[in-house]
Image (cartoon, rainbow, N blue to C red; front, side, top):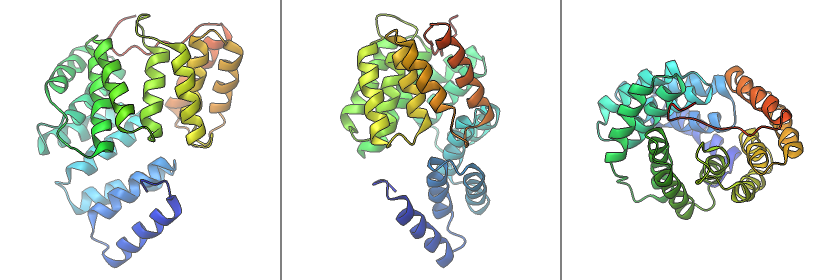
Length: 267
């Protein structure tokens, strides 16, 4: 799965579950793959099964929360993150993810409280992909409390650690294109990074294309921004709330306005 060999990964997960239908980790790992493949219904069934089999399986709660957030269902993500924190109280990822979900729901007070806790915690793993994810999520926490330079630092370090990870590169491009603070934005670098993410995903990930549209809007090329935002909307697996957000961005670009992703409660 880490190498992107989806068919082989799925075959192995299926075989593991056939051998042991009670193996919760295999269901959770298969759900992660299905989520990446935008097979949303299958992913949710497998997350639910993993938790049913192992009610104290912390990662299953965290990963299901990430799944809900991708669907724009932040209200469903927060209880899973709360359970994840109870099971692993010093996990900066869970605090940062919950902070972002609170911010998306407009609950700035809770978002800031979780973000402040997250930035006090340090990444503990030496596994480079996990460490990159830790830094990505801590960057989110820094954004919420208005420390944009520190967010940029963490995202750049995440890309340094995982230069071949599409999600990490996309996260940096999105931040450089959409940060509300002008001194932090870098449209040219955002376009370059977003293009790289699109190429690495073979132009199959509509989220990467959505980021490229935002990057072009930041450099003032609204024709390209409109083109790529429309292309991103061709994804049939797009969740309704995510589709609505992209449609709103498309209208902005048609009005020749860039998009600003505000997690710090500013307007």
